[in-house]
Length: 356
Image 1 (cartoon, rainbow, N blue to C red):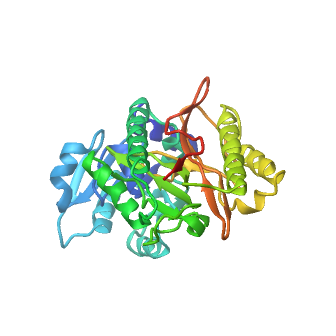
Image 2: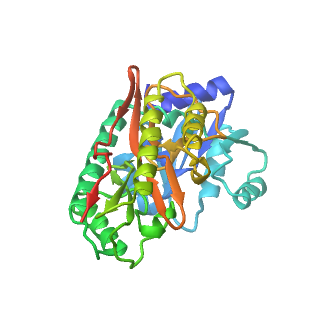
Image 3: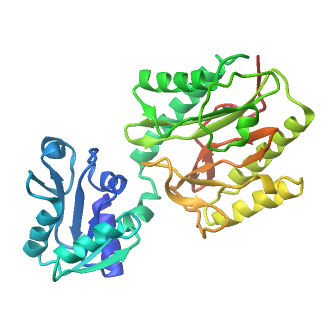
């Protein structure tokens, strides 16, 4: 089934007569549209894509399976939608409660008299977790490019190079290969590597540093996400121990991403294993997240999320240990869940690497 057919099956099972899709990644998944402003209305009989005049021609070229409508100023999207509701007899409307602001919801209540609004979790998000073969193929290419970018950057590291210079090289490599960064790359060294989401500075690399490189490629709309921590010239025994503990739990977590497992249990195993070495308190974020049209696609590997592991999902697996002022280690790979188990899609070496 195509995305529209899959969505309609969910609407029928959940007894939603109509759904308004407003989150742009879900709209892209559903319709193929790559622009930045649109909505999609889906009922059991109708599927209408609506955008403004900036995207009229683009929508005609890209949108599949939907009737395309566009409007020009001074008309507004809410007015067009009200007309469509009357045309199709929509009197009960589900919408994504996680991506509609309170202000927008209140405005709809005022403008759409006679339409019952029902906030729901976007069913597109659960459907997007299971990747189609063509999506998996594109993610593979994005992972290959991320591997190549990591190699390009690591091969050019040296003492004295600044975090900001490394960041520039990441962007330059991705742009020159027809892609863009799937998120703001993280480049942090030395004591700054204890910042899981630190931003690059003018700090130069120094002997004894951990350097964490977290980068990803967005290629044809699909994302990759890889992290490696390397040592600059030399590391202490304590640093080496921490690195190998993180590598141990990352490998074990990947092996446990089997169909029928639960992400919460995998996350718990990681924390329990780190705890046996006195390191669990230094792992403060979740183990991973879904990957696809968004770098943080639907789904979480976390202590707080009951997350079934299913064939067709793509996950990041990224445990980390962050100790001030020693620094931090994170190792991250992208993993596809298959019928025969996990398949790692990113291939840059994970063994401890020292560079001069």
